[in-house]
Length: 350
Ligand SMILES: Cc1ncc(COP(=O)(O)O)c(C=O)c1O
View 1 (cartoon, rainbow, N blue to C red):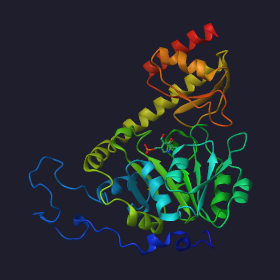
View 2 (view 1 turned 90 degrees about the horizontal axis):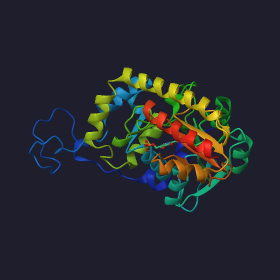
View 3 (view 1 turned 135 degrees about the vertical axis):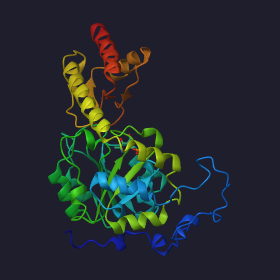
View 4 (view 1 turned 90 degrees about the vertical axis):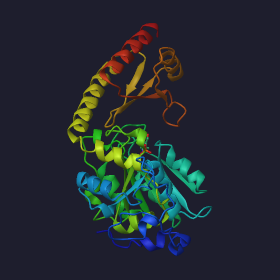
């Protein structure tokens, strides 16, 4: 158990004092059958009622899947909403700062900007691992959040668990480990560390392995105390009823999810071998995710060539330390064949 951690000392004063909005559906307990409390249109059409603000049924199912109590879960309109709530709960605009281990997912920096919070970027080491000492040197008493992404986007690698554990022990604020791609990785989630580290917040999402990017459902996993604070400030009905219903339906298909993950990993490994043989590819980075980062001799040229064949990849070459790098998501077998054909054409002309 981490000692010397004061959650209350990290929470913004206005959040501590806030009287949260109390929605109609929060205010009664017991059984209701005639709902005249929320100014809804009473004519049934499947969506005329407000959704459950606390998503109880969905959290029960996710709790079962993740092996945690529903009180350790916060659901958001994508993990992007959970990221924003973390800023609003813990970071005082124009006063506090956050540390982001870069290069990484761009929304942490954007959320910092939106919330007027200084971003202290600390570069990952040459092998894209956290530089623990540099993070601790960059941090001061105003450093409220530390963002780490494992497997990291766009570098695709898992972060070293022992380094994450050191940071959980030594960083004085909240440590956010974004596990959006963990389902594709051989290592396991840090969920079993939640009891030991009250400063740990894990982000997961249904947008990747579970195939539900379109319904927007992100998951925050943390201590009950942290979740209670985030619940106080979240928009009351932040997960709509279509999302809750669809997620519950698709979360029943655990076998199909597992088959799809297995298939994506097989396709990824085939593509890794193929890419390594192309003359214009200078480096294929190891991957623990559903995408591959490669360094080529002319990132923009490759991007434009594939675009002409209607294949869209992500040009990451503008990012410091990722010169001439592009990121390629793993598609279906058929899509990957189309990609390979186009890459072969590019190789012949290079
Ligand atoms: C590391 C990482 N976290 C979070 C997200 C966004 O997740 P969501 O769709 O749940 O907002 C992404 C999307 O690409 C991502 O790469």
